Amino acid sequence: MSDLVVLSFPDQETAFQLRAELSRLQKEYLIDMEDVVVVTKDEKGKVKLHQAVSLTGMGAVGGGFWGMLIGLLFLNPLLGAAVGAGAGALSGKLSDIGINDQFMKDLAANFQPGCAAVFVLVRKATTDKVIEELKAFHGKGKVLKTSLNKDEETALKEVIEGDSL
Image (cartoon, rainbow, N blue to C red):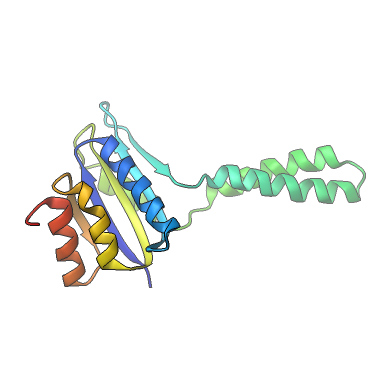
């Protein structure tokens, strides 16, 4: 079972820095994330999702490969690759893995312009070590939502919101 954590920040740069830090921690095997998305709201009020992985691009590459392979069987690999890439890109754009996009957009609709949030779906984590590594973000944000247990949520709030340290 994965845990959802939503952290908001008054600026977009801090949100992207947190995502980079979480990616670094994943490479060190301290956290295993299923999904991590930065959601921003620009000055005009437009909400944008910054996915860590482009499903459209991945779908186009996979579809192009399979289309070319099938096209080879019918002696027209270029047409097969083009059709496969288009179909793969479309299926990638329409698929949604991880955190529900509409949920993120609905929550971000309440943000002030210029604000951002990081949505993280965590499979598992070495909580004490992750919290220790996140002390660079002390007092810079707010914990909006979590499905963590009380102790983990309290520790996260202390670090991110700056209640005490």
